[in-house]
Amino acid sequence: MAAGTLLLAGGRLRWLDPEGRCLSETPLDADPGAAAEVADRADPLSPRLLVWLRSSAPEGELAVLDPRLRPGVASLGRTLRPLPELDARRLRERGWPRLHAKDRAFYLLLARRRLEARLGSPEEALISLAREEERTERNSRREETASASFVTGTSEMLRAHAERWGRFREAVERHHHELLRELETAALGTVPNLSAIVGPRVAARLVAHAGGVEALARMSSSRLQLLGSRRRPAAGHGPRFGALYRAERMEEVPPDRRGAYARSLAAIAAIAVRADATTHRQLGAALRVRRDRRVASLQRPRERTP
Image 1 (cartoon, rainbow, N blue to C red):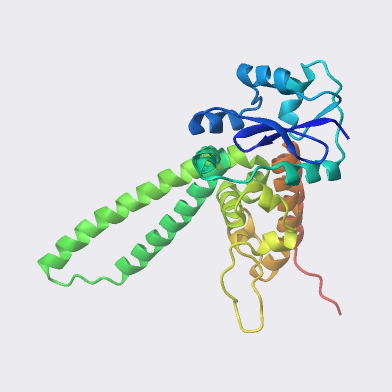
Image 2: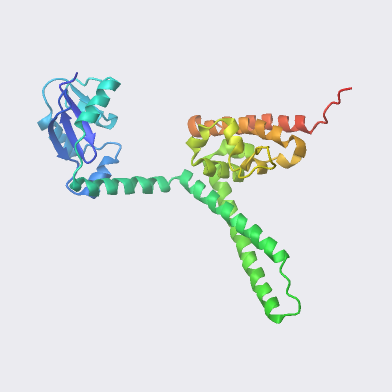
């Protein structure tokens, strides 16, 4: 066990002894906002903190509980010892300081910074656009159905209302088309492989229903197949697909074989989104070949047995 272990505990740096007791500590910064900014940096050790490290480091071998602190501790010229996972967990649990009222401002500001960074990511933008596009499409369909049943007769008032209503529907449709273009651009940039297989619109909806690209990549193909399904098509029968019903080339498959296509498409889509989430390799062209080959096989007439 190292004689001293450095712990980044919220807004403080602490040297711990082998039992997890605090030997000395210092705040990252006196201002909670500045401390939250320092805690989020790739290298949180400012010149002031490096001076404190040199003056307060205990004798003997040293260890760190945060990889970001390793270069700063290594600069002390001392032996840096790796910690086994169980020892690191025990020291972190014992050495973490009790929270005080003065820590509240720091943690609130840190949470706000991380939330803003998360909401500003391309993935969150894609999720927001997908949900807004789906909501706008529902409203557009609802207005279209309502307009088909609206009768003006000979009333001038109703005809004037119908004209205003028509202009409103046109504005909604224009907004929907613009939103769809933005959504497709975002999907092609965030999940290019998945977009190549199921189409950018459906890819975005799958990510939104899953709650993120990584969450979608962890799903099995059978669960991915049902994302977005809302109700049973008939008593005693579960849904065959959700958002995949609107995937590319689904309409080219005979209706009685679309369930089989959805299963195959979900398996290919699972491979595509895992590449988008991990390796970022461009597999869209190769996976599209597999998809098109499956469509061709389902389009062929079934052989009748004598």
